[in-house]
Length: 451
Ligand code: G6P
Ligand code: MN
Picture 1: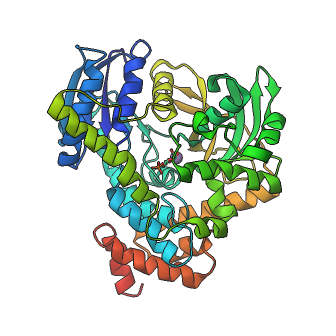
Picture 2: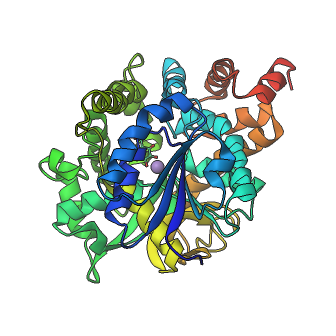
């Protein structure tokens, strides 16, 4: 363990999430004291646009924290104790491709699920490994990378394969977001919930939701049967996910639980269990990437512009579970708190009927040496089988990335539940290879060489 105050670097400093994360850090300075915050991004222009907003957020709370903005990894990581990673390789422009190409073939177009997620994985695994190596070279030898970079399940598996000893903790805010909604429905603070959960990232189930030792899943089931995982007034539940597409996503917990009421699914299971309805409701010319570019991103850029002009920062970003969660996790890593959180971790027998070395998402106690997963035991055959198939798709994708193998990429696409036939898989993959020519040179060569 190292002594506070800490040096924290944010890799992907130009992200729309950065001001919210920094705000969360500022309100928790007592718990997580900081000497310096460094923003690091390879897109200097984008980071320079967002940096003044971040600086303002810091200065509203502290005059003493040093603030550094850089594209030089040595400056970014030298002596750093924590790195929060949130890279988006290809930015929203490539997310748009990930979503629109499958949709043109009648297949789910999504950032982290289905072919879009697989494509995003092919872009992200190697840059993530590069980042780990830079942190390894320059940062404190016990530094922790807390990683939000998507597609998290695939990134985590890639890291496990390529850098098994790296001090990286892969996290996702979806389970906590679901717990926020559960708390709102039950009328209790989400921090009072203790949940049991198993699965992969964006592919799992809550099996128990305890409040003071009592399982509230039966009460939630009743509510979900009418409203989905939202309060009666949806806007009240969920300021982060208040766009209509997210409201629909939370409501879709209802049809899934109408069919399978036993466990409460991660909302991303809608893409695997009801792909046809999803495709029917998606506009192939205007997907979530467009919504985000025209919404969250535009709003933040406009606010940065206005702040530059007037010195007044408009309310332009959201502070919620996304920022709170990464700070909670970092506190537990920093001070060996053993707090219980849902994170990605190597299975090592936690789920007895999934492979020992699979990366799973389960509750774990976060210590300064990393997560200690809680034993889940055996999961039912239905869930085990869904998980195995998804895991195989993701593992083949990782192998395709490492080996530059076209055939393994095609197998990964074909195995994915969202893809109906091998012809769909091939047509989508081939179009994606062309769209990703700047990112997947090895795969493109293998495709052209017919390997
Ligand atoms: C949740 C998920 C993230 C995902 C994000 C997308 O927070 O956990 O993995 O990136 O939603 O949200 P957006 O608003 O960009 O569609
Ligand atoms: Mn996520």
